[in-house]
Length: 388
Length: 252
Image 1: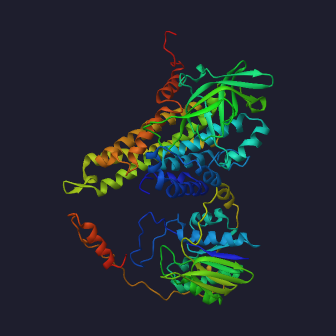
Image 2 (image 1 turned 90 degrees about the vertical axis):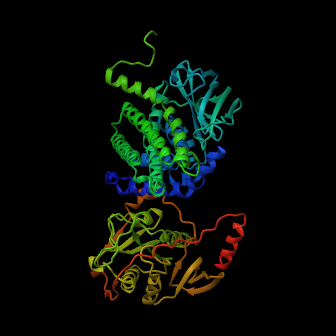
Image 3 (image 1 turned 180 degrees about the horizontal axis):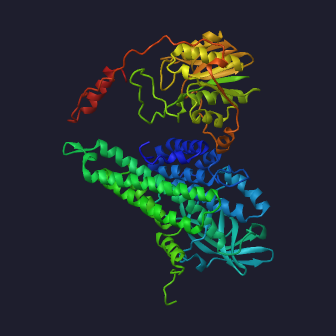
């Protein structure tokens, strides 16, 4: 394949290749024929979750409880193929597996795992993840959502914002401030006092549902609190899981843009020759190809480290920071190769390009990942203004 | 019911195919994929096996390579694969291929053999019928629907105007068209279990069969380039001209 210039396939097991091929086929047959229409309509048919569940995509790298138990690298490759379709499709799988299932799997009681994970793996129950708030984004520890005891129950109050899958979810993992630290709660979305409001007028990630969650005196029993964690380590470890999928995923979006522009450049003729024969265009194509191969190599390296259990959150930040910004660069460059055609949804490029603006910001902004790495190499945290 | 599905590993159709200069044989990379038409045969086999005792065995001839194509069939749910990989079989013609496949199928034992109508890389379209003849069982071809139970098989045989209902007795061979069933995706669990499933890798000597190739491709030439076609300028009545053209070609 033209895009596998470095023969990175040689780094994968036969099993991983077959799994990737399966997700690629699923994306080509089930996502790509319709995704431009979903994007234009601003919808995502969440019924497809059951088909994803059948395949084993949901919580695929978790062990037990109906999950497939694949390698982390395989999970990354699946994200890559899904995002070659659309960042919204990959986001759906990231949220379900890494943000909703993972905290139950990692911090939940045995009863909670048995109760929820098999149905979530099958796509029968959809989850979402409530951490970000209207006034609490990059600084999640400033959250205002609270959970207070009332007898043996908990009462939750607060507002969560930019919640993927919020309006289609059956349960929300809500992170809230308690007297004993930050705790996570499994909140059924049909609980009295729970409201989800869909966010409209997005110009990015349109084939994905984004919501505001409002909790007004929502009562859950103590059995719905996650027992395993009571600090920011809880939500941050979930984010690290999801970011891992993203650093693979965006290279799928970049690959799709590169391939679309390469095909276009060889067919489109100006001044009596295909535009691929112009040096300026060749430079763009080569830069894109180099980024896609280099970013995929980085992702696979980080994947192997995760499989070995030695991948640090800072190394995940390295991948998220660099691969997302480079994918965005590829998408913009590909858009310019397509000229005026590049602004229509007839081609996948502008859809990926505007989607990646969201990916650039969510799951830790580009700026925050820069500061995480800044702290890692200098030892000096620079998250707050020096005066405070 | 013991079901054998004939399947073929072929070079990825998304990549350009190359032929060897002297022999005109297809160049086969180590990594080959399952012929898409065989996904239908495998699915048909799995569905029929599900309704009866017994499972699906895949039989294939050709370079094993990385086995990715056959692993896909195993990941879909087949129980076992048999591959006949022998350097002396390179460049086999349809009859030699059919003799080898028939010998391997007979060695496994079967009630029903399922094959696609033709391979995507070779397109001879005659191997399944030859296999049926060698095995001395009826060949029911171009099936768009298959039912098999209690020693009997009934298919809908696709014709240019509709379909015929054809009945035969088991054991038999059936060729299925694309669309006979909706092939499942291999599940991730299936993919991981496929590695542990048995694969018999046979050489020609393991089968007591003669398989000499008499057919030879003497020369090849490129398909003629498409000529310019007709251009219809839209002066407001272009649609009528297009309809007329389509009617002439008997498309509508």
